[in-house]
Amino acid sequence: MQTIIEIKDLVKIFKDSAQEVCAVNHVTLNFSAGEFTAIVGPSGSGKTTLLNLIGGLDAPTSGSLIVDGKEISLLKEREMTLFRMHHIGFVFQAYNLIPVLTAKENVSFVMELQGRKRAEVERRTTELLEAVGLSDRMNSRPAKLSGGQQQRVAVARALASMPKFVLADEPTANLDSKSAENLLDIMERLNKQEGITFIFSTHDPRIVAKAKRVITLEDGRVVKDE
Image 1 (cartoon, rainbow, N blue to C red):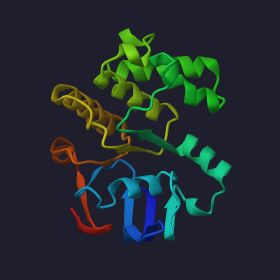
Image 2: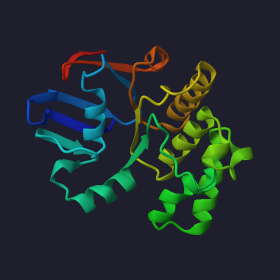
Image 3: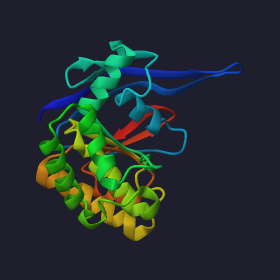
């Protein structure tokens, strides 16, 4: 399988006036296309920080982080923004939908930023919302959707840009059990049928049970990879 993420000796240290915290401690990992991987560990183990580093939302203190053939730690802020837009999809615990936009508009927004043709934007938006079971809620704003429906819109939005992979940070944390199961079934199907790569940061045993690979962090270090 094609390697899409190469991490070598990655370190992230957060500093404040009182102390330094090594959130990611000399991590070396590779991820391949088509993975369905869960990163697990106790609170404070570095899961979200590692995901933020991979997604270019945070900069490493040291080490190498190559995403789709590019050393992203060397990119300037605008270059990193454009790189994320075209290469990485994000699903956040808090949904992060734009409240004044409908489900359809939230999904199509990133493609419009990419400069895609209107006909392509319309077609792909419709396909994605159908894929996540929301073809009947396209014109609803987030406030009119349940938590599970909002998170499904977030998954459709993450896939809209046709990214190399999707990073999902605790995507089921705010969902009831039925909504979480439905969301996981959708992501698992997209992974199996369309080969979409998903990397999760999670405490949820349901995600761990479905994952093909589980990476365990403790104190910022990889202690298991199986």
